[in-house]
Image (cartoon, rainbow, N blue to C red):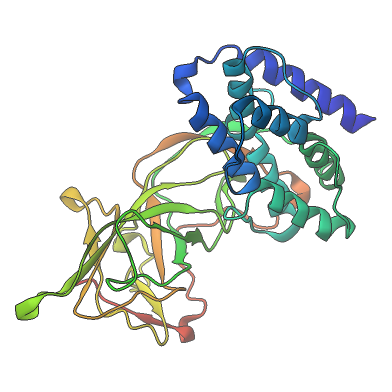
Length: 335
């Protein structure tokens, strides 16, 4: 009963708040639908727009939302991605639940897959047929005494966080426009506020590829960081961390797993703002598990999760870089 009441309140809040959005805020009608389905299912669906909308509302809420086609879609975007002052988004809540259970999140899975994985871990059974909104609230009620909330804080650009590439990239296998899977290797926490859990995605893509050419011309792959996917709807830009921020350990920014054929890495970006990596060489790959350090490109205000005392496993991580796994990495100098 408690979960049903919470679900009803969430439903009403999103209906009321979403009326303040204009269609211009969320893109075209079809693009909105595609985006929502990709987040929930991992792919866009076929069929008429109204049928697709009805089905997604049924999966999320167990019923249709009121309003025009455009208003209903904006309500979906608000519920799934944006949230509001009273209710965090579905993605925010899923991330918090995953972090509470396994200390990391699974942003490369669709939301439905993430939810099913949580249910399997907690109940050893998937709650098929029930609305996603109700299933998420049920999980949160099992994990937290109080309702999960978000707050906004100002986050400086000083924090240094380790990240790693999850797939091989190189001139022979990468193409311009390819997305590249990169994740955080540690929690992004400031003053007991969780901004982005371990496993959070750094949205990145291949900006350009140059094949090795005649007369010794080296091949190049330019990897561009777009933004960090945090719990909230904000999309802070990130850059390679300044070597001076690495805690005085003498570590360089780029580190690669043993056996990697990576033979060179340099900063990419205007005026020293390292918004990506430039990998250069005649024949090279950057192997999966290659690691590096990032920080925000600039300070920003973000929606974050106030960590309750029961989950306060760690104090705020300092900018010190731990020398863990030092026997399994090779330090590479930036050319």
